[in-house]
Image (cartoon, rainbow over all chains, first blue to last red; front, side, top):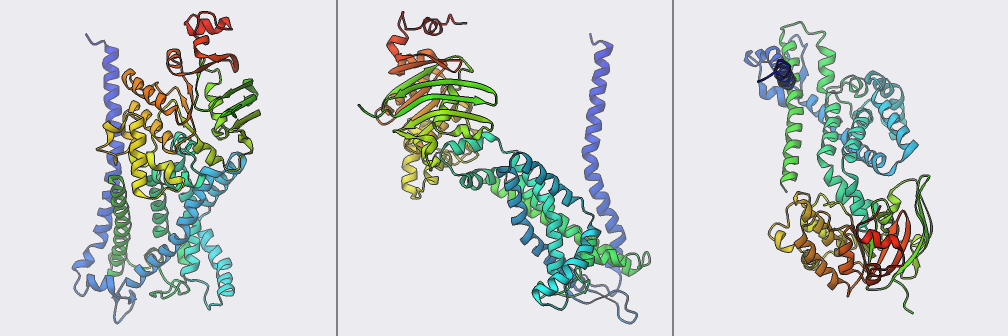
Length: 299
Length: 252
């Protein structure tokens, strides 16, 4: 016979199970809801006469408010986003992962604690402040150091983005390295391995999934960042030929123009299409990373 | 007189304020198997970790006295990595590295600079055979070492410890996770290995020390109660009454 109390706890168990199930499913629902919303606002432009998706992706001419000849070409914007993100990652990945290894493996006690606090503090700086730094500090600095006309360019924005994404890489990367059991370290060291051998033969392979997640979060941060790049890139629609060229990113375009575009207008819809483009970009990055991880794991 | 392989003089070790080894001295001769027996918390593992300086991974330890390996003070050794290759260590809990079985065994030789595939193949097969693991894993050397069962991982760590051709092999309760039949096979291997190396055998199984060790040391609460020929330690009248009690299981 089941007593009333154990019946109650049985229902309680069921209720909690459902609650957790809803939490899990809600993540999927939100992602789809966002995607649906973006599509609802952006997709109608695809059926508009005179709109050409191929031109949208490949043309460098972005004249959304032209009275006589409206042109929506986002290639320069895509190039802007990719160049800024790419350069930022070239700087951030070695420094971020290096810092993670340093904090996790070489630091002890006070130094370690204070470093972690300071790095987390770096993550707490609002992006508008970074943009301000880019405008007032980095701009003249780049002009004088590299003798270029304009300091608001790919390099400026990439440096800011690198600084912004390093904290998240360090803390996630450090967590991943800390999750590697100490017995691996001691086992390897007891076999006469040097510290460096332990790091690159044991720790990095063992923590590769977490480290890749750290890099991806950094990439996500860099691709999605808006305010700082709006202020630091120079905001000029331009396919860059060097890191000293001014560019404009997809995100900055949305931020700068969405307020001006009247709701439902082609301009408004095109901006949402850019949102879909961004969404797809990050989706591809995640997918590729996932496949890479699986490839490594199968080996 | 031959230089002792290992010479420990007045070794003291404390973790923080707590002293766990209270000034012990003994030596180990070349190609000898020394059994170390004693209850838990008597400092057996700490002693081994002092010899190959893996004790340095633990913070807040203090060590005085000297340990000489081949007459050389280990604390003065510049190349601690060479020391650790010279002193192989098998820990009581199996720690398969997150690598393939092959790479687990080839790890130390590779670190020491062995690059030729043929040489590595030879080392891997020899060590896995010595650890009585070859037959079970020869068809899946590429699978992860951490996926093996506990007993297999333990033998993998033995193979690994042998992979850098140590002159001294420290076995810290190696048979905890291994079945009796395999244990006997490894014990036979140890008798063979004695020709090539010096073996320190820390064990909870007093009979294992009796079977293998030429001399046995009884360590208790960080002090040596007795050290002597195994036959004497296990006889009906060892030097110390406590030894008799411990060996015969009427201790405490």
